[in-house]
Length: 163
Image (cartoon, rainbow, N blue to C red; front, side, top):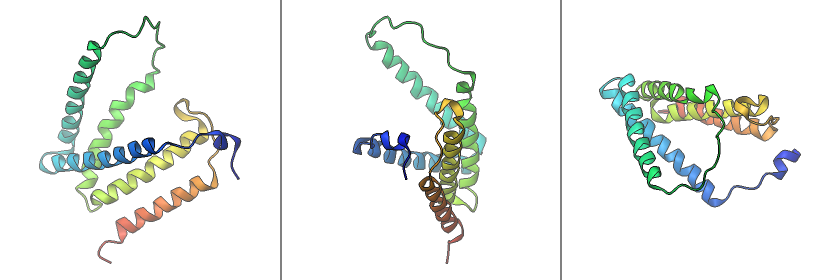
């Protein structure tokens, strides 16, 4: 049984699926690199390194954008909501926590598995209650089935070592 909202959504293109898969691979590398920095220094320093690198990359990207000719006058842009500025705080805490978890008995695979489970739980809550300006969408049975499979996989990854 599908809702009218779900039935009207277009299927993702192979290019978008490839981008999502690639970003997941990059996330894994980022967590691994941050964990290595956290192992040889501290998780707090790992967060500074990650965000310092991000600032340099963002500044270079902004400098490149200034070289581009203006597309038009545009107009006044709406102000961003205050919560939009908290992304850096959650990002810094994420790097600190993952750098700590990667260097614990959870290791890289357990950290990523639990991170994925947490993302799915939050996305279901955001859909259900319309958090962060998202449209309200009642989660379907298949959404909970996907969460159950991710949780089961996480349990196997974390507790199935050496069996």
